[in-house]
Length: 330
Ligand code: SF4
Image (cartoon, rainbow, N blue to C red):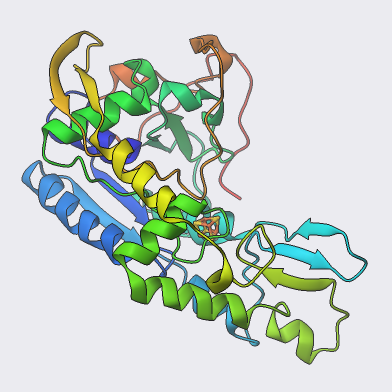
């Protein structure tokens, strides 16, 4: 939702135009996400922005391939001693963060293993809205400088949804793997209603990972218990997802919302059709009063507002806080 709004803002010139937009494809996205991406590609192309899909493989295939290192998804575990647990999540960094970083290095002209000289970096605009400001963090490598245009203009997720709606993108879906264990009942119910084949695929996958990664079984590693996609720790196909969840979701899509301009002023009203699906890789928004302030994070080298583009080679200066950044990427 927020990333789509940010791209549209850039395409319309409300924030500095991006040179590239990157989409991390885990290889197991619902069809609705791929269709939406194709729409965005048209929007971006009209503004001269190139969308690149980056990927390191298919998370579903890798999770079931005994020759592949386990693509650790946050599976729910019913342990043999009766306690409950969760598998450690590594899929986000492996299938999303890593390919994005590698692509950024390629765009800078220093592909993986080549040392990125000090002072060469790309600005990376991330679609984080004010209701999830706690997710805004500095990049952990010196060749990237994270910026957050939606925070700069004070937009919430609701603002993004309304903005997309008035531009014909009110049905923007949340990007998440088909079989992501972080899906809510509402999200599972929507998937079952709108893409029954994809839901059946998730049910099949759920059965296939019941005893963990096949490599562990082959190597005689002791099993901690049984693994599930759903927190109820029962097979996905047997979970009561409830029709009311679907109804609630459809109701949420119909609510009107106020549309704000990129300058933060209120504007026209519009009717919104919105997906209420929270992204799988996205932590829950914080509750309570918004309390973000600009000083909560450090901008290491330069202000986004003074920039002329998103990517490029620029002479680095010392950070605003005076602290040095490590030279080169990982
Ligand atoms: S959407 Fe879910 S399964 Fe897919 S990479 Fe993110 S956390 Fe992992």
